[in-house]
Image (cartoon, rainbow, N blue to C red; front, top):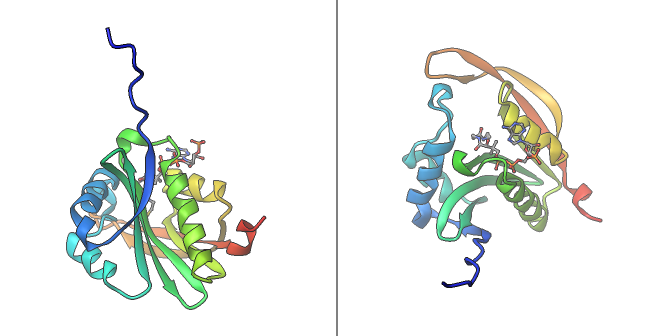
Length: 166
Ligand SMILES: CC(C)(COP(=O)(O)OP(=O)(O)OC[C@H]1O[C@@H](n2cnc3c(N)ncnc32)[C@H](O)[C@@H]1OP(=O)(O)O)[C@@H](O)C(=O)NCCC(=O)NCCS
């Protein structure tokens, strides 16, 4: 009998671009609940990936794409546009790792603040952001329109990047 231990599957967070569109879209479709109509189309994502100041990161477990983040820089601010993790590997810290990398990337680009908008009733995402040190700085009524036509508010959250130092 082979007593060698199975190789450890390591999580890697790697840069992603248009060449990773299929992997990014696979995570997109798996992660976002279609009821809310929040998933982006491949065309939207592909167009955004080519914009100056936009960048994405892919979370790989071995060779399997299990998560991604998408950010956009505008002057001293960076906006986290999307973050998603495949449901089969939720609650294993993968979004937390992606989010920390976004914070580090934003700081590395000389930004001072990281902003995001989250649906007001998206409790997992709000927990994730609160835990990472984001604080609510605003509320935008009727910001999201779900597939059923219902509108939901967005919470605007901010992270001051100098907190990362030290
Ligand atoms: C939100 C999301 C990215 C979290 O991914 P994840 O990899 O499961 O998150 P993590 O394991 O890194 O969780 C980090 C922390 O977030 C909080 N959290 C995440 N999911 C949670 C849940 N379902 N319920 C409560 N808290 C949750 C917890 O504090 C957690 O830490 P803990 O497990 O030590 O308690 C994932 O649920 C997802 O892809 N949702 C659909 C897409 C989406 O809504 N994205 C956000 C808007 S763009």
